[in-house]
Amino acid sequence: MIDSAQLWLVIIGLGLGSYAFRFVFIGLIGNRQLPDWLLRHLRYTAVAVLPGLVAPLILWPAATGGSPDVPRLVAALVTTVTGLATRSILMSISLGAAALYLGLYLAG
Amino acid sequence: MTRQTTKSIFWKGARDAAPFILVVGPFAVLFGVVAHEAGLDLLAVMSFSILVIAGAAQLTALQLLVDHAPTVIVLASALAVNLRMAMYSASLAPYLGEAPLWQRAIAAYYLVDQSYGLSVLRFEENPHWPVGQRMVYFFGTIAPIAPVWYLCTYIGAALGSSIPEGLALDFAVPITFIALITPMLRSRAHVVAALVSITVALTLAFLPYNLGLLVAGLLAMIAGAEVERVTKKRAAARGEAG
Picture 1 (tube, chains in turn red, cyan):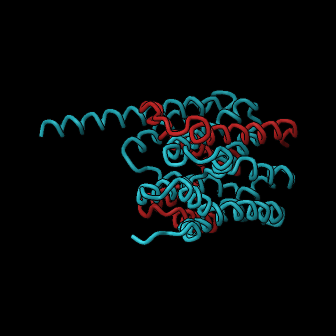
Picture 2 (cartoon, helix red, strand yellow):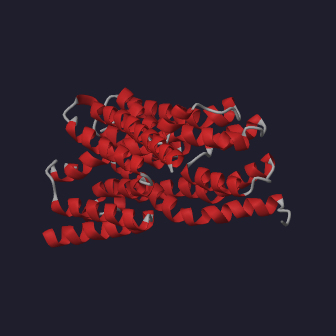
Picture 3 (cartoon, one colour):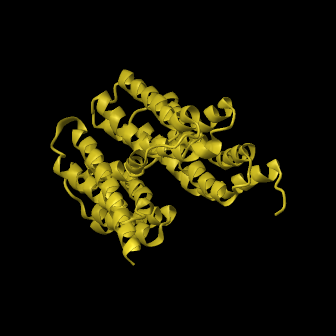
């Protein structure tokens, strides 16, 4: 169970922090130019955090008590390959889910 | 060129954004369901989606809360996912910086992947649009997206308990994240950043409090920026030589 005080702290903190990120440049800086090195690092934040978050969830899924699971690994692979080939979020989620259910069905 | 009316520009934004309903809707439903499963009540689930409006960061925070990570780690990791919003803000500032403050304050709240991506594309295509029309276009893109985001979060939270075990919803989060990440891998620098992130996160998975993810994010960001810098330098050198 998630602690209620911690939950609300996270919701409000994340809300305020995200708003600050969104507001900081259009709101405060206006149209002044930002240093290149800063923009260069900001460009990679999403692609730097999300894969690291997902990799352990794929290799050691909580649903199997943390041991690697073939249907889930295959589903992850299918989602990745489809995403790279089609660049379509919908297509890769659909095929990834289809692979997962097929795998779970075959694994019994 | 025909003069575009403010109204037509608003609808242009709304039309451009309409296909994204197919991505935003299911993503919001997913968040609602997963948050409900994690034990959040309706008020908490809706507050998340209304205050944060950023699915990836919300799911990151939720995942870490379920893992009982300390508050500081939860906030730092989820905010790191949202750091890209600062980049969006920086990138739109030259286009929207001259609008009245109250408009910019509202636009900042609605600065999400879709409104940013479409706006920056159209602003570049239509440099003659005055700042007022740019704002109108921006709000046009948000008109189909935001209501769907709130509504579908609610549907997900309400459906939550009626979803059967066999659906293996635990894996909907990883699959959705992979689907969000792969289109971001536009250049070698992005691929390197993603690979560094995965390698470091797995290697440091033994660290307490999910600290490994923060280290992985930081190193991957530096790696991506460095690859971009070197690639550009090489390209410039080639350009001069040949």
